Image 1 (cartoon, rainbow, N blue to C red):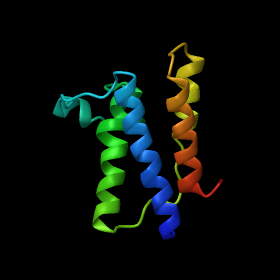
Image 2: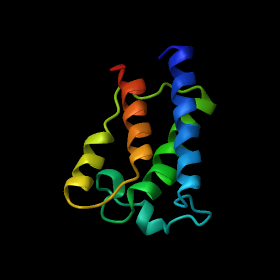
Image 3: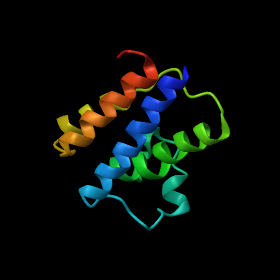
Image 4: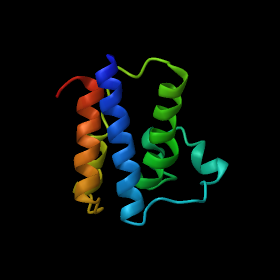
Length: 110
């Protein structure tokens, strides 16, 4: 991933954090160790999507960037959000857009 791509990912991670704060879904309280230890994709059995984004995705991506480690070559969070929406779970539209953009920035589907 090029420097410009990393910059695009950082910008979107920051935008996701800002949006979570703006809609009141950013938390100062870390989920329990049990909730974070889920082995299911997106911790769907223990975390809401907003908590997963904050405590798993954004945190891990920032850690990779800070350490200079390579970022994943693909990202597919949007299908999970689509599944949530299809089941009746309302996810903030701006957050959905930002997740779509980060999926594209990481996967190179821009």
